[in-house]
Length: 128
Image (tube, rainbow, N blue to C red; front, side, top):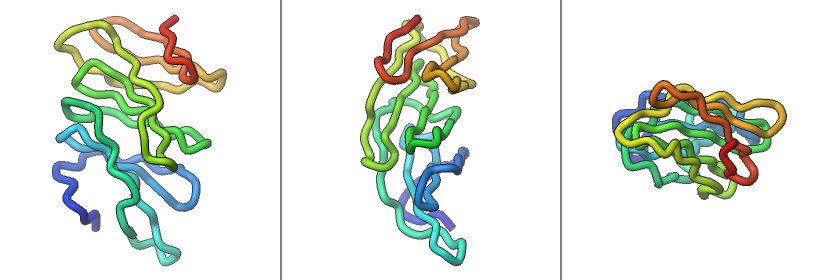
């Protein structure tokens, strides 16, 4: 069971190093959790704040990076191991959502928002 005051969880994404996973919530927050050796949910390691509306999609990259898309028109790039935001990728649109997001093997991310496909470099945040 997820404890620790994370209301309205509606997304989970696994694949973080060290038996960790991330949850996304309608309050705009993400939380990084650890799993114990017996498969039970352990403690919350980080609360990631930044989105101003609910989180709609999550993607986990093998190096501990998490991508989140939100109803606030942005994609955020998180270092889930250290517990902080690396980049905020804005669609430039107003009153639209970002869902889905797709990381590409070459370090770019695709996101769909406002009937437009956006492409960014994850490392720099530069929109292509």
